[in-house]
Structures are given as structure tokens and as C-alpha cells.
Image: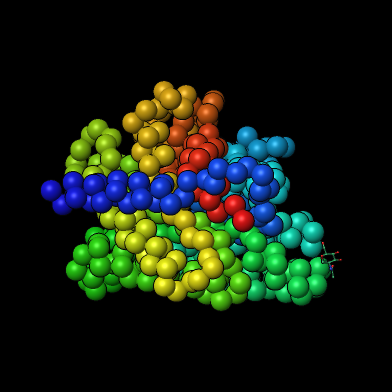
Length: 366
Ligand SMILES: *[C@@H]1O[C@H](CO)[C@@H](O)[C@H](O)[C@H]1NC(C)=O
């Protein structure tokens, strides 16, 4: 019953969001996005972690095998990720580089970078476990980047770039996985009586992060919700072990948790929009629906495998466990997941395409 209510709420909310986000009928206005800046975790990291501990890195083969030049850039996939497709769609560039990419030029910075760090999260305890770049650290790098842009094009032009940029934030999955799901006893499980309560704690921190960007001049935000966490190959594996179940199935409760979090996120975004951040545009970036659709209708996307990743056994390998020694599937385009957690380039394309058809045009219109 509880679940049903959540589903209905989500549907109504999505409908409401769709109605207020219909693209404007005029196509005379040319897209006016100056740059794309990404923050969050591995879903939008394009190589920030290459300077960190090997535990959170993926700048080794077979990662990146389907990128131009087959370079393992630090993207958690076989090829491009959603923010690459978006940057390309906005006419900015084909690949959104990491801010710490040693080859990044002053000129590259002007059209956007990613500050996101794989294994990062909103909760300090997540960072204590993963040692990724925290959201606070990502913000510090952003401030440094803005200074660099202003030195390049002047104070006024620098501020205009920030004002006309699209800010993509994607974070939260690691908080739930590391603090609630994977370990039987954790500090957060003791502290919070329900997943709902923990989600509210996370969303409060996400709200503060958005406000911090707003105070720095950011006006256009696209904030991702959670994927169906219970369907990630790793979660199917862990769930099977806990339940002593031989077959692989999605962990229903974790998907319900994701949906609840996503509903609360949408409510947060509309309240931020109306009360706190005048002159801003905030849109919910729904990644749950396209991923669920890929699960339910794999053929529509050309997929033959949705429960296991392409790398290794597809059940547990990611990061340092997915290596050049791991056997991989010959054609990643037939898989929803590249490793035990991260989508393939084909799936990222579908996610970006869904964003394009739903919210991107609303955010881009001036
Ligand atoms: C700022 O942008 C304008 C318009 O593109 C350009 O003409 C001007 O040279 C820029 N200012 C600096 C300091 O680069």
C-alpha cells in the first residue's frame, strides 16, 4: 500500500513536472548555455579520481575501451557518460573533461568541466570510507576554477559564464549503499530509525549544496535522483547472499527507498525554486525511469543482458577489480551495465536522451 502511494505520488509529480517543463513552442531562441559543470559521484566523474587511491580509480583498461583512442580516462564506463552526451547536445564539446585533467587548458575550462568524484556522497561518513573528493572539496575546486576563468576572460565575462551555465548534480547512491545496505551494523543505522529519515538528512545537505552554488551565481540546475539501487548488479548479488537466494533479482525494498528519496527530492527542488532561489531554474533529472525502462524493455534498447555487467563475472567487479585480466563481453552495447554498478555508454546515451526529451530544453531556453 505504502509502495503504491509512492508510485502514484511519483507519477503525479512527474506529470506536474512535465507540464511545467514543456519546451517553449518557439524554436527561434538559440540555446544559450555557456558551459556545463558537473558535481557528485562516479555517475558524472570523468577522471577527477585519477589522482586518488587506487580503490576508487578506474583509469585502467578495460574502462574506456570504446572511447576515441580507447583511453581509460577515469570515466566509470566503457565509453562516454551522460554528461558527455549532454555537453555534445548543447554544442559545447564532445567530452566533458575532469577539472583536474592535466591537459585541461584555460580555454577548455570556459565551456565546462566535471568536479565529480567517484565514490563521493553527501554524508561525511561516506567520504570517511571512500576518501573521494567531498562535495565541499568539489566546491573549493569550482571556486578555484571560476578565479581561473576570470583571469582568462575578465571578471564580467567570467560571471556571465557561471550565470548561463548548466549545473548538473548527481549524488546519493553511495551514501545509501555504504551507510545502510552493505554493512550489517553502521553508525547511521543506529542513529536513524528509518531509511526515510536518513534520506531527509541527505537531502538537507543536497539543498545546502545547491544554495551554495546559487550564492556563487549559478542559476540553472539539473539535479539527478537515485537509480533503482536494488537492480544494480552488485546489489542483486549482495541481496542474493543475504537472502540465500540462487537467482538474481532486484532488491525491492531498495528500489522503494530510491523512489521515496526521488519524490522527496522533487518536493525539495520545487520548494527551493519558489521560496529560496529567485530567478533560478531547477529541474529534476530522472534517471530512475529510463533505467527501469531499460530493465523492463531491454529489446527496445538493443540489450540482451540487464542483470550482470560486461566486465568480469558482471556480479561484483568494479574499479580495481575490473582489470585488463577480467574477461569482458565482446559488445558492451548489448549490456545495460558495464561493471557491477555503472551503466554502459549505450545506457548513458539513453539516460541523456531521456533528459533531453524531458528537462534539458526547459533549462536551456533563455
Ligand atoms: C568579454 O567578452 C566580450 C564578448 O565576447 C569580448 O569582446 C571581450 O574581449 C571579453 N573580455 C575579456 C577581458 O576577455
